[in-house]
Length: 310
Image 1: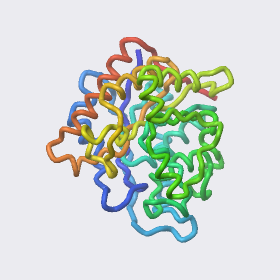
Image 2 (image 1 turned 180 degrees about the horizontal axis):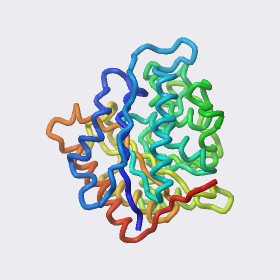
Image 3 (image 1 turned 60 degrees about the vertical axis):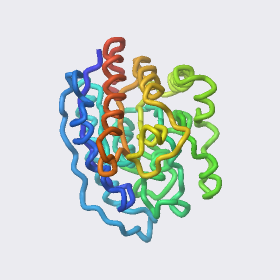
Image 4 (image 1 turned 120 degrees about the vertical axis):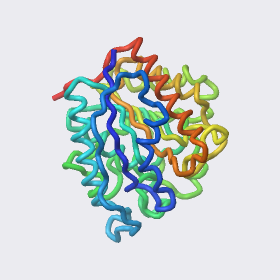
């Protein structure tokens, strides 16, 4: 059975100033019961350095150096959990925490990424619709596309290979084209929202997992990224860009259970939930219950996928 360890990553360094409440998500989700009944160890909190809304003139990224520094600190915290044979559950924060979690894995070897997100987050800095906020570019940065300060952490660029990524249930293709976002690379598997609807959540998740666990794929397992904007706006308004045609609570739970149940998932991160705009806390309770349900059910059927690595 997986041994869960919760790492709090309360960083808004990659987010726009008007939505900085995401740094309060870890304590809000824990208060909403995310860890209830999981016997999960609290593995610490990685505080973020000072935030600035100024865009760095060289990299065109907000908080570029701070994100670089924070990524190393978060990687150390995640590495300690993996070294202890546990399954890290990282509670963010904005999506730029991906750089820290993937750095932890890149230090160990070749890992994949299941990117469950309403957006592919692949903007180059000059086309970034959020004024240089790294949360719109974190997947691009993780694949090495962008300025060295956020893309070549510890000279390990890329943190994850194109062909080791499955983007799941995104629904932003039209927006990316309209805003002149660089195209997603052909080696990356994209199972968009329409494909999830066609296959069903379980079938689409199996397709993504099969891709990430193929013989020529990442040898050591894969990480799971979950952005709260994946949910339909009838369920989740506490994100910076709530939109229709998202997934349901059950569809996400099924997806997570399928991924973790493969025994190849090594950890999970949750990002972008903003308790400051969750008036009665219902969005947070729904998100917490969905993640808790998936982790609890997976604990009954799978074993930890984390490996010590080289």
